[in-house]
Amino acid sequence: MKRALTAIIFAFAIIIAAYLLGHAIINRNKADGTITVTGLGKADFTSDLIVWDGSFSKESVDLQQAYSDLERDKEIITAYLNSKGINDKELVFNAINSNKNTRSKYSEDGRFIGEEFLGYVLSQSITIESNDVEKVETVSREITELLNQGVQLYSSPPRYYYTKLADLKIEMISKATEDARIRAEKIAENSDSRLGDLLNANMGVFQITGQNSNEEYSWGGTYNTSSKEKTASITMKLTYDIK
Image (tube, rainbow, N blue to C red):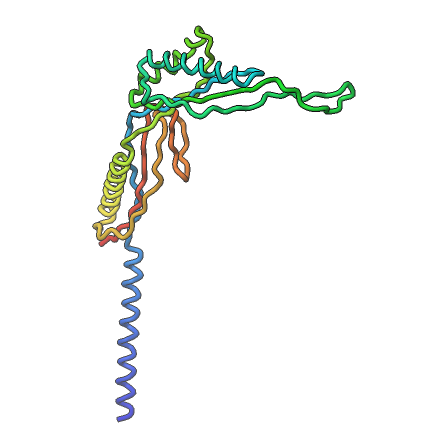
């Protein structure tokens, strides 16, 4: 009786061991039975918002005169821009900056003996923001015409933006996801398998570069503002179960 009980226990142990081993093999195979692919979504678009900055300044030993001269230039600049189709809603004059212009003085033997006051320097910057991209581009190229009126306006290159970026990003995610799914289906087909459930999805960084440029992608995302014609792209990394 004791011998029979021992045999039963031993057989039961073998069955349990076999089950655990088989279950381990199934889990191991299941872990290996996945496909991870990366899809790309890409689109070209044209900027629909332009921002252009400029600045002008005046200098005088008399502070009041410097303010008066600066105000005169502001009026000339405003009239000029209005004549070019830039309305007051598109034009912003920022706060005036005031600084003293000085020059270091030294004695004949090279010792510093103080600062010489040369005058007050007042400067003001302007910002033009408009959805009429071509209009502002034209004005930015012709701004040197103000020299004929005695005004020197220093300008920066225009910056270009896109106001429908949120919608574009959703579109790119959809394209990248579809591209990844097609790649995964092709891999599964070539390995005599079929796709199962989507196990994981990771979105890459949204990149915006100038069209036909050699800009490199950045791990934190590239956002080109110097080109009117741009290319947006994003990647999606998907992991599927295979059957």
